[in-house]
Image (cartoon, rainbow, N blue to C red):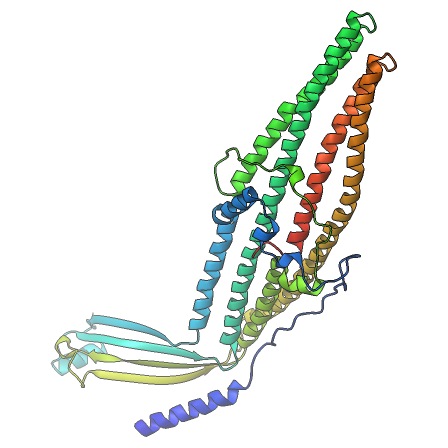
Length: 471
């Protein structure tokens, strides 16, 4: 018996070694992707701002504190972490697929056959009673040999899915960091605009008093006073509107950090932040390997490619080894009488699917289609990433020009207000010219604050689109 088992094992191992050279599927290779040599007119560089940790890129203490809170309290990020944990569990399962499966069984049954049956007549003839007892305690083993590499491909797909979820978590973090920073800059812009509106209310009050004095002197009519009061009300109307916007923006930031709505203490002002003249972008090829959402799309492609191999393996013969052993007896008193009650079986089988109602072929076709879809998704993610970087660079360039113009416009309109007041006092300008100058100055200052905020947001967009924010 030992010789037979040895011969069986030798033949089985020879078959495994002979078939092990055949592997299903193809190893992953990154598909060709069209990439520019540089982003727009920006010369390529060895470094990129995306390599900076977000704490270095955003040095404001309040902003750092808000981002820290968001990275621990944001619910979208927590969900992303749970998806990573689920993928880790599936990977552990895929790794364990190499191992044999074991099952323990314990059964006890009694059979009362018909007295007219063959079994019942034999029991009666041999005085074995009127029933048959059977007691069994055993361990079963089944082991599928990964001849074609199907299990390896399944593990490869699980590994890629884990990396995809991990990169997805990073993508959520980069988006969250950018959202907090942009929201914070928007909050500071609203603070600035509120201060501008309040200054204009005070200025409007001065103009109203000045025109009232002119009316008392008989130099203007009541219409001029009403026009001045209307301009003051226009500026005053902005105050509650901006206060409302500030409160809503504070609540939005708090929700991003996973906290209940509440005010946010801050000491910085919008003009404290400057955009550097030089923001290195690196090269597009490096961005593809660094940006989390692009990496996530590529890991999805790796997983899809591995699943094609696994689907091919399902169409090939599967080699399995089964074994069972334990104790068996037809009397409870003899159940654990050793070695007489011991039993054992070992078997090897090769199963070739023949007709599965097209299930396996459809599975393979769908896996190939999903791989093609993943290639398209990867290329689309790469194209979107390059486009976002280019858009951010264009915004930074054009908004810099707008900042210069807006600053000059504010200086011009403020000077116009001063001159209009002086000319009005000397009777060389009408009250409408004073009101018009003040209105234009108000709009210019509000516009300048918005342009400053837009350029800071463009800087944040560039940092995120290059793949920064997850370190």
